[in-house]
Length: 291
Image 1: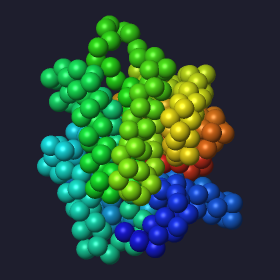
Image 2: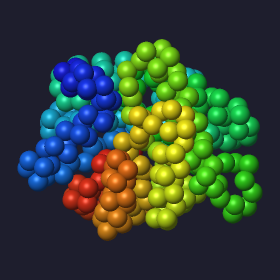
Image 3: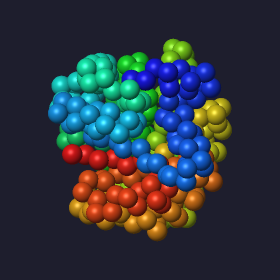
Image 4: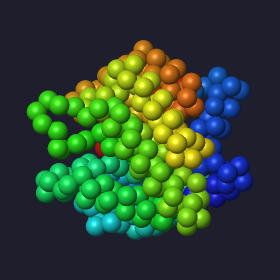
């Protein structure tokens, strides 16, 4: 999994994903071609191997984004813990002689985003504690990125939505916990992704989108980790579980806002999108596909 690029990122004291995005930006200035990182949902060994083969064919970075349902301390439905997941991907990458960078990530890490926590109606403290332990295990195993997504709250009633202030505070708490664990144990720097495309996350409205990023900036500074900033913000760009149309106009608008804060927009639910070429054209940093 291209140790040379990892070493270059480490020499600059930046996470692997951030380094790759920086290089993409430098290349775009040279050749005028925008690049969007492909992120696969690793729900089976077959998908992992297929994604790695594709990355090898195009000599392109590949990112694997695993939910807590798929990979967790209890093995998830894939039967893989964090360390087993990393070993599995590295094994297949070596066997396939993949030379391009392979990024390993948590997808949608937040309270009640693991089905078990919702169905058993875990308390906020129980679910939050479990998520923090999952983050620790991921960092320990060598994950490169964590998507922090505390936008679900099963204690709310009816149509009540979680406030963006609460989303920001819980995001800050989870990032701060991960960073304390990482630095305390002298692990390499990792990247972060924040937000959600879901309506309940409140990031569909541009004003709230800006407010979230501002609250995040203030909160990370308050925690003395303002040198940590998410490389990706998940944006609502027209795609969700039931649609397949990517909206490049909204994407460009969100990209402009995110770039002013030093982030890129990441799209989820990119399966079967009818206009995939519009992702790089509109400046999208990455896209999740769950085959």
